[in-house]
Image 1 (cartoon, rainbow, N blue to C red):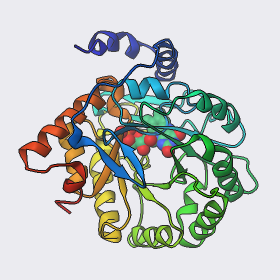
Image 2 (image 1 turned 90 degrees about the horizontal axis):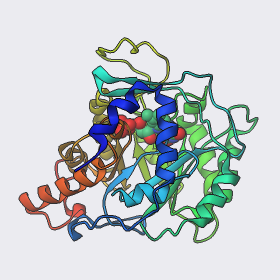
Image 3 (image 1 turned 135 degrees about the horizontal axis):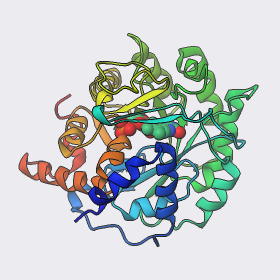
Length: 345
Ligand SMILES: Cc1cc2nc3c(=O)[nH]c(=O)nc-3n(C[C@H](O)[C@H](O)[C@H](O)COP(=O)(O)O)c2cc1C
């Protein structure tokens, strides 16, 4: 039985960022162990990597790569650490993380607070990388005069310790960052990133926003294919606000969790239509149950990720969702996840 329902009331009395910090500190005390066994049907290959489960931890929970192995031990098939910027930075003024309990949501305007790539590199070098896939999400410093150079430097700096790299240009909390999704800027960025990737370097994913205009998914897919990007992570948090009940709904920042679900699913469908299955897609945003994950896979996601639902349900959620996916595969007559990908697209 999960202990999380017992612990949650205490964690929820604390300020959200403090509770998060204490959670990371507590996880650091847990020695990494063998992840729980999972059915063979959940095994899947993406961009040459072998995933034991398609359910991953989204970026932002373990920004500084402090507990990736512990999260794998808890049942995540893969963990994305970061966002890490070349130089350490403080992020925005506190408070900057808000739980919207009535909406099963979170708003954050952290602003890429992190201790920088060099310190994470050292920690990742100590990881065994044998318990599952560890990806590294990279970003640009807020005050950087050349953001594209920050991404290229990040690729060079972190390629040696990452099973995959994610180029994050979709955070709403670094002013102007999302403009790198515009076709011209994106071409320039991805060309620099490709050049920076060492020979035989890790696959590179691009993480996009759910708030895109008509035609933008087509443009992004075109440029991503042109520069050999290995997959798209759809999507980051949204700046939109729809029918929220919580008194904190007016806080600025990116919204995640249940209210993001329809938007992230629509964005995934748009990217699947734009790519016709030619680019692996990773579905993220508001996934809280096996049914949510299953819907995303049937709509075209090869892998899924979550973060906010874990705040409400505890870290055992990833394993429960994975087992639920295996049941759905069996029930609907699919031998593996890859057979089910896009089966309702
Ligand atoms: C507190 C918080 C911090 C986040 N930080 C990052 C980040 O540094 N980089 C990133 O790419 N996404 C970040 N995200 C976005 C998540 O990775 C994910 O895309 C988004 O929350 C939607 O998934 P969810 O509804 O399951 O949380 C953050 C999300 C939250 C809630």
